[in-house]
Length: 186
Image 1: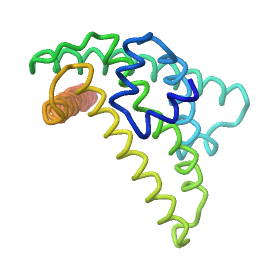
Image 2: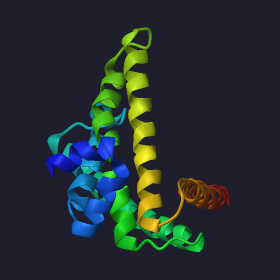
Image 3: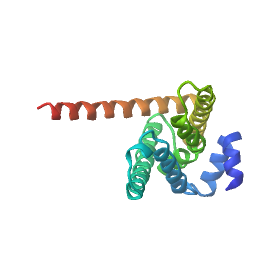
Image 4: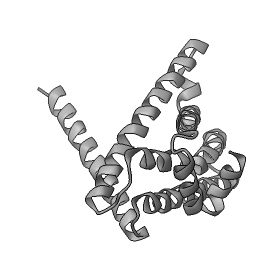
């Protein structure tokens, strides 16, 4: 695994292909769990609003459950969209790309946590913020390259599938918010 943890940064296409050919389930759930825990711990309000150890553990558990649901939901959505655009990826392959492309984001979360502790006027905030942006963008690059590889289509088609997927998610969330607002005002 340690070779793949390094090569995903430098050779994402070859690494994703190697993982998918070897075992597309390899470390998908552990990577998703780690990402979910890191994201939960890095949230601004995690330590401010939770009073007890039990509250912290419950919040982390909920974060992990939401992260795993997101893994399956996003993988299904992007598999569907990719196949509509002429790709050939299976759900399991897209799920592999989703999990493995999150490695830079996992590495970014400690910096996100530190950003919440630093004074807004500190010059360190720009360094850490830039670090987070670079890692997040690299995660996106790995996602697009990986989706291109497993779907057997171009980088541009993978970028289009990603844009369509995120627009779909935005529209669905917008509809949910609209319905919730209308439901509470009646």
